[in-house]
Structure formats: structure tokens, C-alpha cells
Length: 313
Image (cartoon, rainbow, N blue to C red; front, side, top):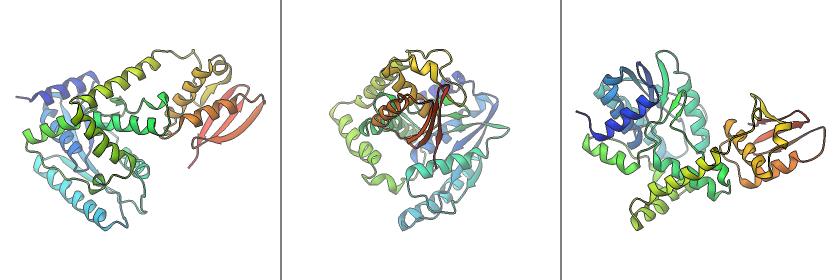
């Protein structure tokens, strides 16, 4: 008999047509990924899913405590998958020190992507409501504006985030119900960077002040995003490489800003500010046949026919 948490997960997987296939679960050993792996294992028989867990070792670090944690996490994840009788693979380590969250994220996805081949068609990560809310707040604080609200989606094949409608508290409740073991990452205990402060102080205080506030705030940001999405783009605005200049110039200034933000999101540019969007639109308003400029981690090329950006390393 399934718990309510597992019934909800089943509905999410079925709504995204995840059945009769293989699922690669990113497994770090923390609470979130431990809950994801255990719950997927619990319901895998109903949907005829083949599950494999993958741990990504981020490699060497000058932080001794973090280095010891990574070694412990690798051993822990392997032991847990053996207990659950789930296929397991350890990827990495990185040959050079990854010094920030962005570099580690890129390394993880690059390594995990090498395993996406039959029968494994889906990559599952354990992002939840709190993660999405933290991302959106972080971007708003940095001045991204409404364009930065989109954040993560449940499904962006082959990536699937089936826990995106659950809060961290709900994950912890499920873990206690199922007696799931996990490791606490020591990097989450510091109030740096900004995300950890938002998580450990700001949102915690908000929830204590008013129960349910986190979910309500997340819902409000969803509604604001939906209001943007409902404003449809002109047909032919976007093409595979960039934006068509004629269609772009038909937009209002507000619409042009939204279009640039959408384009940057499609290019997987993670961090850009509202001021950068404004500057890009100003640059594109310069009456030249062709010109180039740099902004928002990209090299931009604009001419009478098109607007194209190339991500810079």
C-alpha cells in the first residue's frame, strides 16, 4: 500500500508519460536525493521503471572537511544502493578544483549526460519547492526582475524534477515515515553564499512567522510567471539560432526585454540582471547595419535580419 507522498509522485510521473523506461536518479546522499531514490524505488514496479542511481564526485578541494565529506558521501551512496538492490555508478572525480556552485552544477550535468542512453531516457533530480523559491528570490535580489522568475520546470526532457511540487518539510516527513538515512552536506551549514542565507535564515523565519508562507509565496511567483507566459510571442520571433530582427522591432520596449530574457534562458545563461537586459535592448536600438557587443556572459551579433548571441566561457 502506497503512502500519500508516493501516490502524488505516481500521478506526476504518469502525467509526464514516464512509464516502461529507464530512469537515472542523481544521488548525492542528501535528504532530497535520498527521498527521491527511495520513493522511485517504491513505485518503480507499478510503472515498469528500471532505476539506476548515479553519484557525481566533485573532486579535489582545499577544504579538508568538504574533502572528507565527499569521500564519505561516495561510500554512503554506494552502500545505500546495495541495500535497496539498485544499480549504481560513481562518476568523476573532477581533475581540477571546482570553486563555485555553477561550476559544480555544470560538471554534474556533463557527467550525468554521458549515461543518458537506452534504456535510460530520463534524468531525475531532487529539486523541490524550496529550491525553486530560493532560486527565484536569489535572482530577484540580484535585480533580474520578472524575467528571472521562470527558474525550473518539472519536465524539460530528458530532465525531470518530479519533487518540484513538494516542500522540504514534506520530504523530511516522508524520510521519517520510511526510516530513510541521509547525510548533511557541511557546505549547507554556512550562511554564504546568498542561497544558504535565504534557506537557513530568511525563509525559516518567514515560515515560523506564518505557517504555509513559503508555499504561498512560491504560488504567487508562479502566478506572476504565468501572467508573462500568457502574453504570446509574435509568430516567427524565435528561430533556432536567435531572434528575427523584424519581429523583434515590432515588440514594445517591455516585450523586447521579455524576449531577450527568454532568449538568454534558452541559451542556458543562469545569471543575468535586469540592468543587463535594459543595456542589451539599448544596444539593439542602435541604427547600424551590423554591430557586436558583449553582455550577460554572451557575445552579441546584430544585423538587419537577425539577433544572435554566443555564450562566452
